[in-house]
Amino acid sequence: MLELGRHGGFILVSYAVAVVVLGGLLLGTILRYRAARRRLAALEADARSD
Amino acid sequence: MTDTLYTFANPQRFSRLADQSLPWLTGITLLALAAGLYGAWFVAPPDYQQGETIRIKYIHVPSAWMAMFGWAMMTCSAIGTLVFRHPLADVAQKAAAPIGAAFCLICLVTGSLWGKPMWGTWWVWDARLTSVLILFLMYLGVIALWRAIDDPNTAAKAVSVVTMVGAINLPIIRFSVDWWNTLHQPASVLRLDGPTIHQSMLWPLLVMGLAAMLGFLTMHVLGMRTELMERRIRRLSLLAAREGD
Image (cartoon, rainbow over the protein chains, first blue to last red):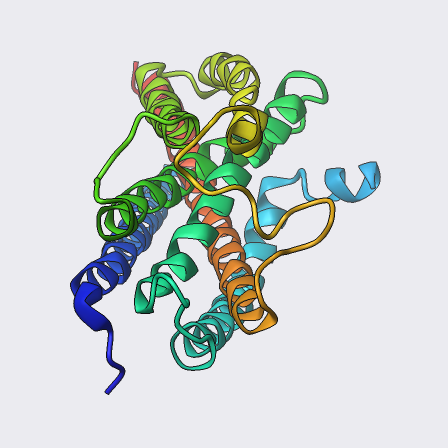
């Protein structure tokens, strides 16, 4: 196990912040994309049926 | 080069290319990230003064680079919007803003987490930290401006002007440690006379920088593809509303 010294908490929190922020951004983008894809498919199906 | 840029001007062609390239971009990003983290944690030695706390550098510095890169990309896209009227320039601009803001936030927070054990303080109002905080606030302002104006074309023009004016902050951030007496250390990688950090620390840092860049580009392509779909949804919804009248 890597010894992080007496400031190990600061190191681990730094990496955790990066994971949370970038992970949250990526998740938000993917969810937004999926919602847009569903909405676009519905609109295009409506347009074809008219 | 102009022909190449306009080759990608067709939104449907861009979306097709995005669909094809995203799996590859994701894979290369993950490989670079794995290599960078391995180098940062198991290859790079502890610092003779800072000890293991130097590991924060491998998150903090690439985040700072990407925060500035994001605004530089937005500035180039703003020129593409206002001067060349490239059809995808404003889409690129809008997609880059939240990614740049995220990296800027990581840079500020990890900087505080690094500063507390090393400097004995979470924050100082020195030139480097203050200018990066201003960059973060500018990102938030641009994101808010995109949302405040309904019409994407009108929003794009307003945001482009703000982005280009805000670009003055980039050289201020870069040279703040040279122009003013700052607590933040001077540049040790991007210098005219070469990097001053040892190779054993430099290479993991550069690989983490590459991973951050690839991650930025991957999320940017995904964001642009989503934005194009949302604009198509808006157009179809407006058409449907008009036909319903």
